[in-house]
Length: 388
Image 1 (tube, rainbow, N blue to C red):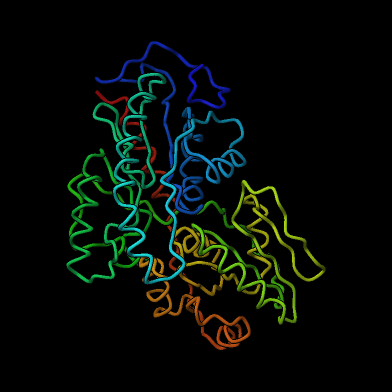
Image 2: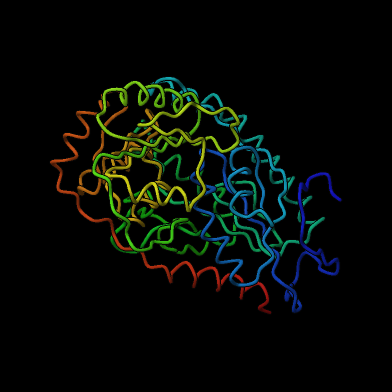
């Protein structure tokens, strides 16, 4: 067994070859799916894609490490998993420091992208993948294997303004254009991600809007508890812990119940719960969905995967963007202007003040997703693998 693989319950036919079509010869399509490790959102939004691949009887392999690995193993315990080092980005403790922190990490990120590309070529030769789906991992493209890049950030917001955005987009597209297709998790109308997903200029490769991605399958709405709150924490350190500390302090003054999901699926240490406040390091999708539906408000970061989950369940939210993370700040302001959410900065966050404002806000519904768009896109991709 290859040292790179941790678990494999799947037969591995050895008579495939890389390059040339048709590739499948009547066998199941073997697809590698690998999400980025910046928070849990990239992994959670891969869940509906993996489900569609399994419905199409594909042989799905996963790759990643740490929290992303723990989450995906929990959701799909029977799938083979390859270890793939993450980008391991660390955020600054202040909004102003984040730009310089990311700039200093740029050489490291370029080395990691090159390293993961080398890793992919080795794994493809060993395991004979028919297709690759990369959620924001720039190095997971292959010259001879159809490769999909998933992103909602075709426009990358920059603190340096428009010229900075143009520079970042040019760099972004230089990687995206190495893939076979780009899948964009948003609708063609009633945009959820605004100009992030609908830029003035598109990549050169075929780009497809696949609808908002959510691991939640909306069921009959359960009864809300008007005094119950749900906090969902996520994202890189130290900002995740900084928000957690602030929420724990604020919740002490709240006259109701709350659940705090810490966003740490691989963490073993538990914070003690009380009769009023329940702490979880992580909840599986089905358990988290129940918590979301019974809460009056969900209070979380404004990461796009969280936004898509809340849109799927049509849930009232209070969003607190990670300081200095331009994408989250843009989404929070954009959705707040449409009255789809209440936006409050981390620096100014006060739980009681936020709830008072939320109670007076006339929330507007999120755009309704078209679930067939994802099914059609995934099915078309799998069919193309066996086309001459």
